[in-house]
Image 1 (cartoon, rainbow, N blue to C red):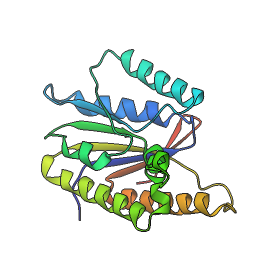
Image 2: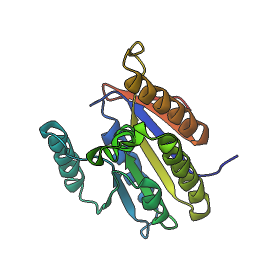
Image 3: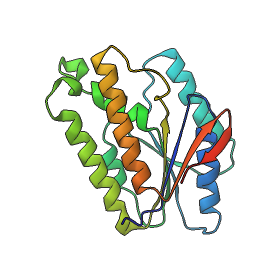
Length: 192
């Protein structure tokens, strides 16, 4: 049984889950002055909509009056987790963005990870090992993801593979988590 204080938060797009996660992270740092508040961002501004979302998230954090250490980790999440230290409170936003990046890393060179046998499995395995390694660092890790499972299966094999991998990853996170929440319409439901 793992003792990592992991909190998993999922919900629909623009459901209020990031705001809820930020408030939770801040609350975890209020009891100790020496804790770092770390935000691991996986987003890449590939289009105007994503650029605006990233800017909105950055602006939200700046208005909080609290110092966030931001780590940009669109691809090398396992490496970013290794840089954390004891008593950090870490908010990772978000799993779905990182998994999309993992799928298409290498696309610009003509060989995306999704087209390379075993590539995605290695990335997921490396990330799970990195999360488990945080056990010895006494880190609080708050993980945000999107809920994509209310829709029927997709006919596109790649999209369906993404959903299946994400679903399995969510199950793994929840099995590791001390707490699990779903946020919809800014209404929070605690599942675990």
